[in-house]
Length: 307
Length: 307
Image 1 (cartoon, rainbow over the protein chains, first blue to last red):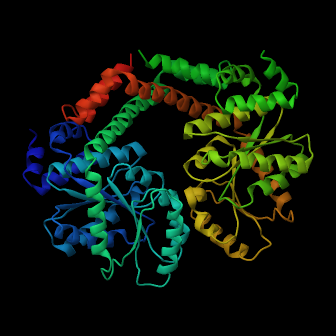
Image 2: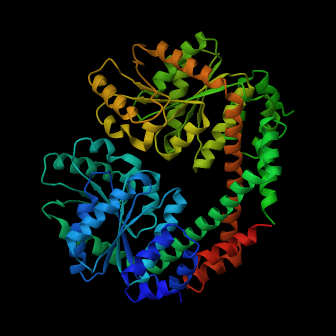
Image 3: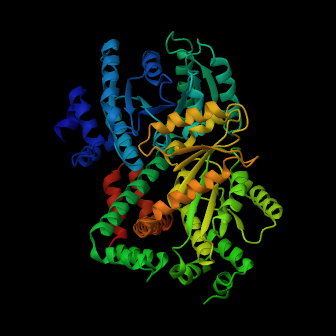
């Protein structure tokens, strides 16, 4: 067993932090770490928090931690910023400050860089969750920063998604960004104490009403703490309901992951062949000169790949 | 040469319509159609129109047609609704009514079903453009209905993208939907005659200001026709500027298409292997029982695919 794996299993926070960095950056060692911990995973449940920037995700997650601990969980937080590598430092700074405020050794918080492609984020996140799972954290709150396709991708990797909105000026503009109204299991209007929370609640109720699942819509105030306990209980209840079919769900998620990983390997192979192999460069030239057509060209390339 | 190809080249509208249906539905015959017309393509320029529903894309495109014809173009219109197969009929109905109003045999209009995946839409659209190009239409207006990732995908297939907004209530909420503020070459505020057009124009100016390219923002009224000629001239100017490097751009687009098509073939192969081959079903079972890990499993599957 790798010393780092031994360390994280035994509760060494430094090993845990280092292991997450390794899987996040997809360093060569991540392969062996995952291999060694994989058999110890499957106990943790994961909740994603998403919504427009400035909705107060960090504050809400901060408030939820003690509530979830009170329900008996060992809580970890992962903050993923897939869209903006530039702000990574700032977010980590926020986390560190938040951690200092909490002065709580029972919670583990990490910011993830997760640069680049959709597949990259999913892979990093799945593996970081595994590392925390193996380290004994049984409830992992995943806060996604920013929005867009990548954020939707994150919701596929977690068991449950909380979508957070806020009645701040300009946020309505972002409210429907990236199809957030389709991914939530729970919808939360934050800053319920300020004007505009009521109308926003109604707008969201209306948007959600069009979907089949009819998920819950709650009002909270991360500032005063109002409604946060109710949210923790809603999450707990939903996670329990889902745990009934958890094995089946885990298998489906593993199948998705396997497809992603195989596709990833294949795409890398395709990209590197197109970039370096003279034969493929020649096919593109032929295509540009219209001496072949896209169907024939694609099959020629694909035939070179398969057995 | 296929009779349908002969027909569309000679200006038979029925052959043209049928050929677009074939490539849109990706029927087996589309392969041969593309092969036969591919050498005749590369002359048409394409302009995408995107923006929130209700922004008046159809009306604006309708107004633009005579302006573009006045500039010497043979104009065709493709309406793509990638998100909602259900509304396909309604849109086609709109097109048909619009066509009847125009009573103009010089313009060709078609609604595309383009159901399913992102790759599917790009493929259908690229090929429908080729069919129109081979039929002698040198300016193809592509109207995308709905928004989201698929719409962004469409913008990659056209030479130029016009993003349309409207000051209607609730549209501000949708204004930034799906990253539309990042894809435009021209931004247009429609319904410039009604209240709210001014503030919306300013909001868009501000949003666009953050981007590097600083594209034009125009006000039009599809209802009165105000600003439509200016828009046609803006489009014409931008297309001419781009035509300078058109061969290089075409090659890059063909390379993208080749990658898409190869990836598509490979993904289909991966999916069908995972679905039918007992060996791969066994790997998933092993993975679920944690007797292997995702890295090893993925490489085992990939190794089975490659030479």
